[in-house]
Image (cartoon, rainbow, N blue to C red):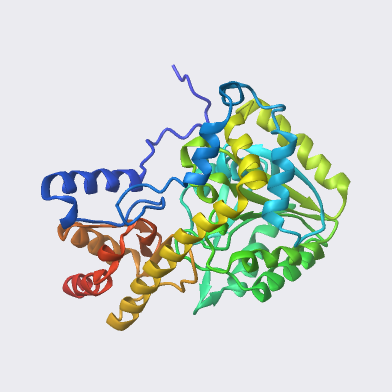
Length: 409
């Protein structure tokens, strides 16, 4: 007897990150944490080797009345003051499109909602060839296909591959849903220039003459950009979209507020016409009601309180860790370049990804673990989480990795 729908994918989920994290933990317990390099963790860690939980954020959360923490949100699309604060914080005055905001369980909720409501089963989602693995899993769960564009041409965004992939998908369906994870791309740390963004939008404007276009911009790591407010200036390019386009920005409190487990974020829907934004909002909020029903009220209240009453302290505390992340990444990149350890173009963010074919990657990954260095395999590379490495652990790491790579080639 078949208890599941015919289209259900019955292959057990394999989360490579958590499997390697478990191996690293076992090694640290056996050989001591000082003898193990754990570059697997995709969360920000301090120099003390502990998870960063910003005091400004959690002091605010703990100061809230218990009833605020316990109660339902005002609506299943989020509290009005939260939605307003999210829009103002994220866009920072850089866009003037019509918009709507729907609270979601982390940035993941915003991504999944957009994929599931903007594509019909059997259609194709467009993503980068090097990307967060959950994009493809979400597509799979919605019975969607995936088309991948090559992310890089040299040290730049590969616009030609992006166009070719869009053209191929246009032959099969009447709309495009495209994910661009930028800035602070996971897992390469790339950040597109404003000019690259303009080229993408200009092309999609042409596409929109015959096909509806939904551009999903995943900005999970934007508040740890090394460029501060400048990192949000590219949003102004979206003001040029056509009536047959929409942009959905997926925002995550997980990274911005170091509140990973509170599961709070938002989908910011932007369109030329208010009617378009409203139509998407109607469908998205029904999806919210049917899927998760309500978002963490305490997390939303905390976000509003921090921005209203503790903004300077929050920005100062966050900047301390932005600077630390920059210092770690600069050490790793400099030493990698000196050692000849190839990596994808890194600008900013939590991760650096080494560049190699998948066969080399597999052998190299095993060799690293044999030398007590734990990383995460991605398509065509090895992800190094500089966000979780102390300065001491970062220094000398690239050179040692190059020696290990040379020994297996």
